[in-house]
Image 1 (cartoon, rainbow over the protein chains, first blue to last red):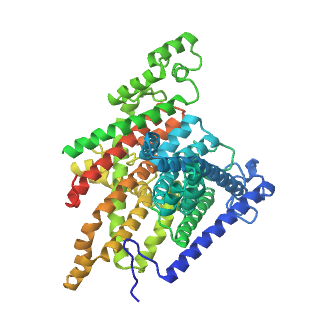
Image 2: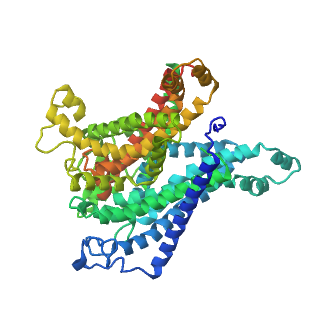
Image 3: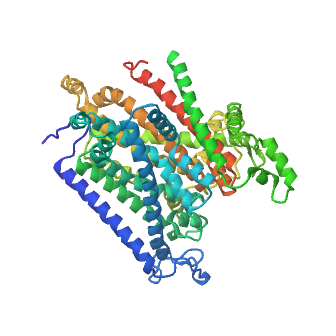
Length: 286
Length: 334
C-alpha cells in the first residue's frame, strides 16, 4: 500500500507508530531504571564511591569490580550509581527552574500584549541568540564553579525555550471561541489565563519537558567535563570522564566508557520518551 | 542592499542587549578583579590604583557605556593568565578554530545532505534506518565521550591516527603562513608532507565536532525532501518521464534549499559550543581550548569576550543566510 502523506509530515505507518511507541516505552523503562539506581545508591553501593584505595587502582573490569576501578582505586560501578542520582537531581532542578520562570513569562507576554511583554520577548530572543553551551558556560563561570551554579545556569539558559513555547501556545489558544466566550461573560482575565488557557497548553509543555531534561543532563555533564560544574570528589559522570582523560592514551578505556554510556543512555531515553510522547499525543511542535 | 543595511541597523539593539547580559554577568563574578590583577600580596593602595585604572569605581551605567565603546573598538580586555590582551590571544588562535569548525561544517553538510536526500528517496531502506539511528545517537551521545572512544580505538588500540595533540606532527614544519589554515596553506605551497600530517590531525576532531550537526542536518533534509516529493509538480515531472535522479536532484533539491540552509544556520550555535569541548579533548590550539584554560584559571575576561564574539558570529552568519535565501529562491524578496 502506498503510504499516504499529509502536507508537511511523513506519517508513519501503523507498524512504525507502534514501533516508535515501543521505543518510547523502552526509554521510559530506562529512565525509571536509572531513577531506581539513583535511589538505591543512597543505601547501597558495592564499594564506597569516594574512598581511595591506591592498592586497587586502574583495575580492569573483573568479577570483583564489574566496571573496573579508577586512578584512585575507586569502584567505577559504585561511582556510576551515585552519578545517576546527581545527574537526575541536577537535571530535574535545572529544568524546573526554566519551567517555573519560562511558563509564566510566556503566558503573561502572550496574553497581555503590551510594552512589557514586548520587552520580555525581546530579552528571550537575545538569550536565544547565544549558542546554548556558551551561554551556560559564561553564566556558571560568573556564578562560581560549583554544581549549584551549573544547575542554575542551565536553568536560566533554558527559560527562553519554555517562554517562547508558552507564548506561541497562549497566542493560539487565545484565538479560540471558548476564550472569547469567557471574555464575553466577564470572567476575570487572570482566571481565564490560569484556569482555562494554561491547561490547554499542557501537552506541548510535557513533550518539551522530556526533551529538555535530556539536554539539561547532557549540558551539565559537559560543564563538569570542562571543570565548571560538579567539583571533585563528587562522582558525576561528566567529571569522571574528565578525570580519566589522561588514561585513555594508555588504554584504560573502562574509566571513560561506562560513565559515557550512562550519559548517552539517559539522554537517549529522555529523547525517545519525548518523541514518543509527542507522537502518542499527536501534538506537533517544532 | 537597502535590506542589508536595514538588517544591520536592526541588529544594533539586539547586540546592545547581548552586551548588557554579558556585562551584568561580569559584574557578579566572585572575587575582586583588581585584586586578581594586582596579585595576592599587593598593598591596598596598588589595588586601589588598578581599580581606578580599570574604571571599577565609576557608576555602573557609566561602566557599561565604557564597556560598549571598548568592545566597539575591539578592546576585549586583558587575560591576566597570559598577560596579553584577549583580542591578541584570539587573533593568534583563530585560524586553528576556524579551520576545525569549517572542516566540521563541510563534513556535516557534504555527508548530511546527500544522506538525507537518499534516505528520503529510498524510504525504509537500510540507509534510511542507519541515518535514523545516527540521528538518535547524534543528539544523545556526549561529544567528549565519542572523542575519547575514537581516540582509544584509532590511536591507542590500532594506531591509525597520530597522537591527538595539536594541528600537525611535531617533527613536521607547519606550511608557510598565508591564510593560517594549515590545509589550505599546504595546498597553496604544494607542501604534501605538511598536508598529509595536517589532514590526519584534523580528521578525528572534525568528525567528532560534526557528528551532532550531521545527524540533525540529514534528518531535516530527509523530512523536507519527503514533503517536497509529494507535491504536484514532482508528480508532473515524473509523469513527463524525467529520470528519477533528475527529479530528485534538480526539481526536488532546489526546493529544499531554503529549509536546509535554515537548519545549517541553526546548527552553528551548537557547533561553536561543542568546539570548546572538542578542542579541549584533542588539545587543539584554538580559541576553545584557550577558553577552557581561562575557566580553570578563573580568568573571566576571555570567557566574556568569547561569549560576545560567538554571539556576533552567530548573528552575522544568520544575516548571511537571510541574504542567501534570495539567491537560492528567487521568489523571496525583501
